[in-house]
Picture 1 (cartoon, rainbow, N blue to C red):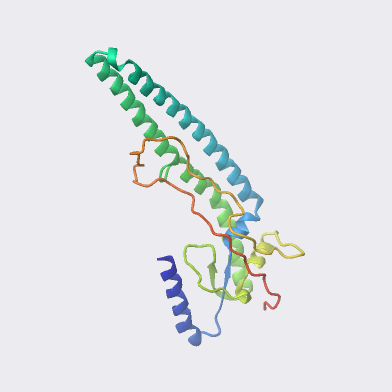
Picture 2 (tube, one colour; picture 1 turned 180 degrees about the horizontal axis):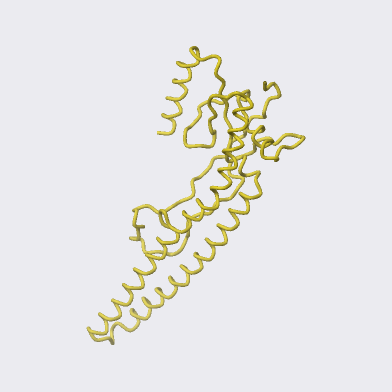
Length: 225
């Protein structure tokens, strides 16, 4: 779908361009820009700390649950039916509590999801404001985000305004910030705890950090107007 969207955009630009030659457009790499921002790195560190704390709590609950399972299996032969039922209910309750806690912290729209939005929003707003200023200064009608969901099949370096946004944020360098490989900033990954193979989150799919592919970015040209 992403490739289709990018193809559709490219075709649209080819159709519209002859009729709107006076309009200018450009693109930026928001991932690369945020990777240069200290406040973004700080937000990721805070998310990692929270994730590690919740991960340890889940692992502790999982150990307690495993212990209940082992004790039940070892003592099952000497238990009465009533005692078996009580133990089984206790194990089932612990399983439900563990599943609920895991979903609460790491599930879709869980605490990690909400915290990531909370911490990243100020950074994203700051980048947006800088992009808006650059667009006005450079008289750009449209600015695309190369690291967004919409795939860009081809990007001409002449239209790369990433460096201008970095300069607007006070992050420009004399030797120029050249975009590097994707994934320079480590995002929080979902927990990897021993779980029931039949476990599913309430939404049916656990939250996962999107993967990125290393891409060498073109250098910003010096012939901007």
